[in-house]
Amino acid sequence: MIERKQVIPGDVITRGDFQWGSYIEKRGDEFIALRVGLAEVGREGVKLNPLSGPYLPHPEDQVIGKVVDINGFGWVVDINSSFDGFLPASFVFGREFSPSTHDLTTKFGVGDIIGARIESSERSRDPQLSIRGHGFGKIDRGEIVKISPTKVPRLIGRRGSMINLISERTGCDVKVGQNGVVVVSGPPEAVGRAVNVIKMVEEAAHSADLMGRVDQYLGGVEDGA
Amino acid sequence: MEGSRMEPKKKLIDAAGNRLDGRKWDELRPIRLEVGTVKNADGSAYIEWGKNKIMVAVYGPKEVHPKHQVLPDRALLRARYHMAPFSVDDRKNPAPSRREIEISKVTREALVPAVIVEDYPRTAIEVWIEVLQSDGGSRVAGITAASLALADAGINMRDLVVGCSCGIVDGQVVSDLDDTEDKEGQGDMPVAIMPNLNQVTLLQVDGIYSREQFQKAFELAIAKGREIYAMQREALAKKYFGGEAMTVQAEEEVSE
Image 1 (tube, rainbow over the protein chains, first blue to last red):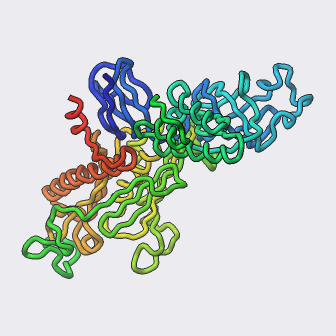
Image 2 (image 1 turned 30 degrees about the horizontal axis):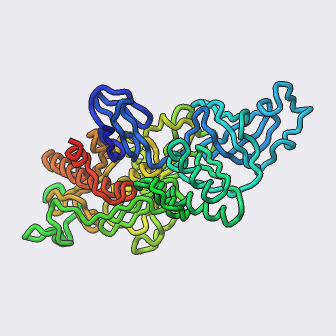
């Protein structure tokens, strides 16, 4: 059985010999919470799911950002973090990129919204982005909703169940960045409904049976599932 | 009283041991704490402590400006304590006074030990403390609310910080001086602690104390600080866990 505990910074989550994850400090044999959140002690060790906080980039994260600047070597992208991401032009044009032969503005201009992957993130340098892979690149339509990055896992749901439910029921295409930026596209009324339900998920993220509430909100048929 | 700098103009504690506002020597003024009061901030808190009304907003971690102040290995924590012009009886000049600059400095130093600044290199974390209505003990009230605002902002912290002041009034050690007691009394001693780590992050003293008085006032401030810490927990729980009074002890009883 997994033991869950509500903690605030400074609380002792548990004592003993465990593996431990982020937002936890080990002091002697005590595991101390560093954030407001829900702590779990299970087979995988001590874990803390924070309930608030900024987006901190991690490699392989999928994010949605806005191009804020272009320099000779790439694009500066606001990724809703304390640092701007940098997308090098060589990642887009390939190795033969040269500032004199390629025009960066033909690909992305300032103000464009792009889906990208965090390529690297180090303490000493700004995070680097890449658009290699399926589904990345310019997002040319949709409405942007920002939610707290700590609520993103609830919006996606177990193996994408929540996000699939929302997009099926509203007929919208919903793209979620791990940095808390969501882009919803589809028919105007459907987009409005999807945006409302996303905001509801953010507000009620801690409540039990969130799936049921979303289902009800979107006028789902009761099938008991 | 020998050693007192000021002759008491009036009795601040009556024969029955009641203070001007009816409190006993070791009682606190009423305190109300609320978390998440400034929507546009990354974290915020509001405190009413006696007649104090203080709003705290935290922004960050964000990029440091001006750039030359960047710390390559940790975050730059900035704190500003400021009194609104309407927070006192006579208008206060909004420009930072000598006193506000000092309080900003000691507030920053009271909060830094709790914040894990190493987790946010090259960034700035800003704490804005705005006193809307002022009474005695506003620096400890500001610190108490600021640590809640930092926790609300989701910044990694080793512990919360909680403050309380004690002092000497009519030659007697008392807790939590109000404005009149602060001005007419013989001493004021603001103390801030990290209650779980059992460490002191702020200790200022003014007035003349005997060794016994100092010991008594210091210990009283810490004991009262722990009472306020329970209110801090409740305020955070109210926002994040839907109002259930949360204590670790209670949780442990349930799980066993």
